[in-house]
Amino acid sequence: MTRVQTCALPICESIALIRAAGAIPYAVAIALDRQEMATEGGQDLPYSAVQYMRRELGLQLCCIAKLDDLMDFLQAQNKAGDLSEHLQRVGAYRERYGVRD
Image (cartoon, rainbow, N blue to C red; front, side):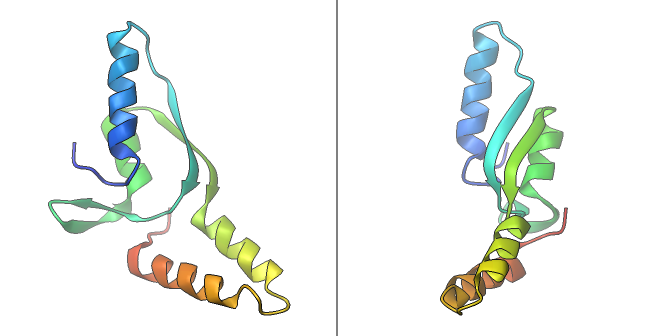
């Protein structure tokens, strides 16, 4: 499997260990779904890394929060303008790498 997100390799290794122990994995929990494009062979794909992982692993992927949630939080808390730099950087990341799930 192509490494499509920074956690993909550890997830695959963990699943292999679980299966090797005779257990059947059901789901994977991810703290933050960055809602980023999957990549394969150095090319961006039109679907997210999480969608790719669901398809390739055949497991449920449960996300505690998504990048959109982080953006909403930053916007809501930016009343004094002290989070504007973070909001701009996360927004730029979203523009460059993001897909809509």
